[in-house]
Length: 346
Image 1 (tube, one colour):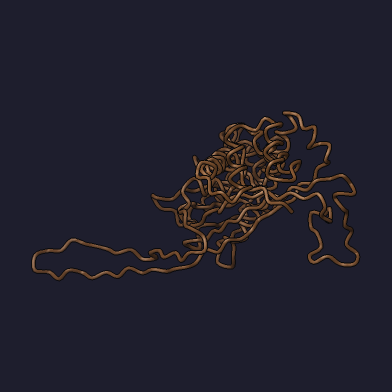
Image 2: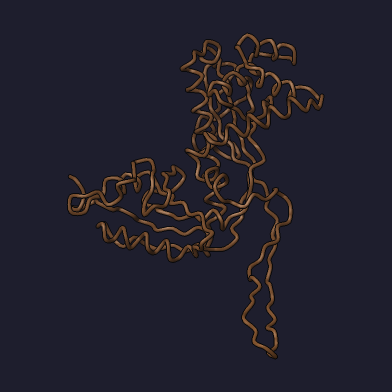
């Protein structure tokens, strides 16, 4: 597989597709650059490609790569819980480095004349945030990439972004969930039950004045919340089937959550970072076209050869890490089925 590096849509959502096509259709540094020029790659993308394909530490090229990465983040934030939290309150900590934080703050008090001053102790803990890899594969025909129109470039960019967000969020929720995660069953199907479920989340999340809460939910819960009615009025008027807000708290649907799951994540209770997004390409690999492939492969695994089928594989991957600063930074309610009876429209 050939490594593509990095990220990129910049201001134009076609930049990622142009970058991918340039590397796929170029065999050497020179031909990759020529392909990029033929595809109309803007100067920012040209500099970033040059910085990646050569050993020259061109600071201008590296700067352009970083700017492309930065401009890609808002697109991920709209569809990924991890990137949204990373951009809105999560403590950014370099990965693979020891993190120390206070678990008990110092206290002070009023001291009267001739009284002894109280002594307080600060408690601390430390942890090293490891980097984990999240990856997905998008397989397309060679003809599709070679004759990609403007609409096709937007489609390719969207598919790569979906592959990134799906793999990252699945890994993210697995990292912040364990036996200490507060979990509760839903109180019922009515609007009153919905209020009870939300109250339970708010009370058990350990929220403070510095919290940055985000409600995350499976798509079926988002649909239920957006259509829940009580007395002819929508219970959550600012909620849509894909997100919005509930009780003035931002909310979003997440495909990585199991059906019937409603969760609350406090970004201020998390620490982590993402090292960046790479894209690898392959024309001669053998792959198993399954959502849950055999690992490792067995004699019964059905593999196809990309070159023989005239296909191209693109594999976006992200190295990221996250750590809870407290167990209650993520809590969830399960088996949510609001409005499955008479209090919502038929």
